[in-house]
Picture (cartoon, rainbow, N blue to C red):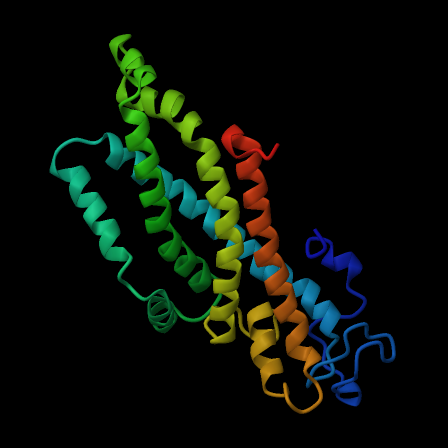
Length: 254
């Protein structure tokens, strides 16, 4: 929410350099978290960088969950060699090192947020597909599925109206957890230089830039975005745990 309100909350222009105020310490001359090597306000860049990192991560994870859910349902209720082949392809995708895929994409289509988004989708779709496949397979043998089939419901109707609502809570929990995990992953790609390019702020690139002066008395340049990444990752993980407790009565603590 704070990042969404960055245009109104950021006290300084996040991309305008100020050579006269390089590496100011936190709380110096109106700079809450200090300034970086180009004199840019770290707090303002932190707010704007969150918009970049979180927006693309949220969109990519959501797209991956939709794709993975569709593939998992299709494989669980499919028949013949097609369904088995689909899951073998999913298993094969787990073997690909995602960072190398991201670097390869950057070489092919150029650096930018689209590379990060595609990499997040590539990393997330197999995981979601496998989870949904397992959940849907368990639901397939239950009486309500057989009853719907006997009453004449088509396969698509059974999947969308019967099975999906029953596995939806599980998918929702994994979606929230994956946002936290992929935020850290997206930031790591940004630190490698395959994400958004300067001067646009990005948490991962801010950490990489701050790492150069980590031991020279300006550690705050890297610590601030690093803590932001950590907090977001942990927060979404806790949010996922909370959703699990809320949506699964068996896990509610008495």
